[in-house]
Amino acid sequence: MGLLSDSFIILAAPLFILAGNIAARGGIARAIIDLATVLVGRFRGGLAYVNIVDSMIFGGISGSAVADVSALGTFLIPQMVRKGYDKDFATVLTICTAILAPIVPPSIIAVLYAWLADESVAAIFAGGYLPGLLIALGMAVPTFVIAKRRNYPREPRPTLRSAAEAFGRALPGLMIPVIIMGGILAGVFTPTEAAAVAVVYALVVPPLFYRELRWRELPEIFADSARLSGVIGIIIGMVGAFGWVLTYSKFPLRVAAALTSVAPTWWIFLALAIVLYVFLGTFLTPSEILLITVPVLLPSAQLLGIHPIHFGMVCVIASAVGHVTPPVGLCLFLGMAISGLPMEKLVKPLLPFLGAIIAVLFLVAFIPDTVLLLPRLLGFIK
Image (cartoon, rainbow, N blue to C red; front, side):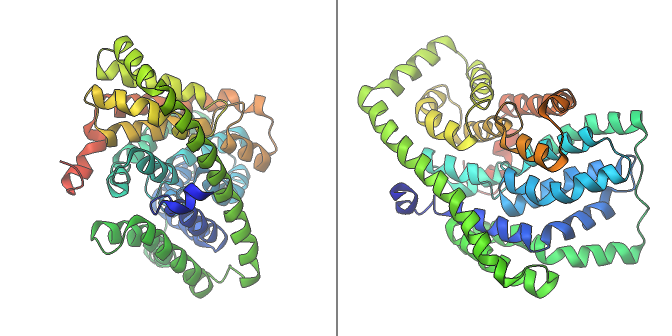
């Protein structure tokens, strides 16, 4: 746990976890669902698009795919089934859209990469917006095809008054990502300080505006957040020792040289890295993958002229795919628990969405400006 507490940057991770857990239990998630229904519910298969938009917005609050499925899945999956959507479709869509949470700021995995690579957290945060939007659009493609083929229902067209009410109710929750990124971009506070501000804001807003968070629930929320943060701390400590052994043996330098010889161009290197990360994601968590591989692969990436922020976002997305892939994807198991469906019922419906995610991942890998454009415009990188 020492490494977790000694690094000021990495302290942002447990604080973002806590802020996300408070937001999930405090009524913010339900308000965001209502707003998304107003925005996209009127289209064919409206609740499916609501699911995608919800994850995009809530991911900007929680930064965690697991929190996303827990907060949104328990409400959206039953609601979609009641409205006539197939349970397997509702479940796999909720599982796959949760991958947006580790990509859009404030991504916990991105904080971890910034710490490992000694890069700007603000830069990697800014680099996640466009890839997150592209993945959301990518998942909308199979959603459109399936919704039209199965004739899924539309939600009633909202009135101006109901739209205004939904926006007003969601606004306090929407201010969390605005405060986080606005404060960082304006230089008011560091990412770690932004995480602390987000926790305080999340503690104040739900009791005042949503009245769904009871103070007696806070010990359980703090305990859940501490357990997850503790797991991350233990992994960091163990991998830190492992990294010392690797460095002493000069193994990273040998791997870097081997990869450079096998992958003579940057795009072949990134393609191989994606394949490696997706494979590792079948039995390791995203945090474990980054902690083990980034110190080994980053020198090779830089040697081939790949920008560390671009490489970092490719790593973040590729490792996050492991959340939804069998046999150990955490979001997959959460979706199974919520819906009651076994894994074999979800694998086939999962494939179109997983294919869309991986297709966008290769697009992001081969077009660096999908990641670097916004950080460059904001002055975080040259």
